[in-house]
Length: 216
Image 1: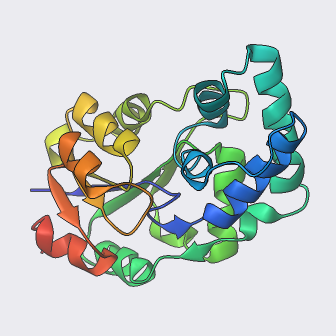
Image 2 (image 1 turned 60 degrees about the horizontal axis):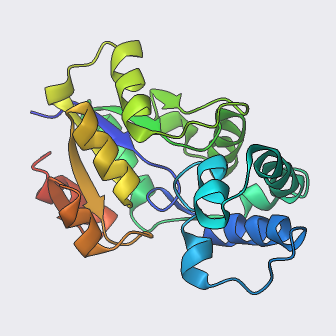
């Protein structure tokens, strides 16, 4: 029986594509990259910026740090981080889970410095028992590590945990940590990829999550 529900943020709780892609485009323009493919830009939604700039543009450590700093110039200082939409059904789902006695956690690769501000801004902080994510200076976005941290720091049993996310990073992290998962199909991942990575369940909307995972 699941008692502890973990949510990814970008692509699962919020649609933050506009904010992330605009900030990435700003950073890349300083390196001469213009009009980049949509698929390449969307790959930044999920993992850490350090990982993405390294993976997609083969940046060395110095350039990667510069790109991240440029990204944050507009993402934070110009307030783009608040340009997000909450996915349909998420507030109702979070409220229902809390009312039914579940413990609810946000497990995100986004630095906590931004995550807390965003959650307060969109009015969802009250539904989460804890926010788990890296520090600003931590380039490691490994979801397995973050899920295991959530388990350890909150005294949870893995068999009572369920991770909900939209990309392969969420599903692979859950599998690696020994936790069941729901791959949501309304975010930025692909159904075939989520299945191949070992998602325990699939849900095409937030409202369907309780039914497909047998929560209630």
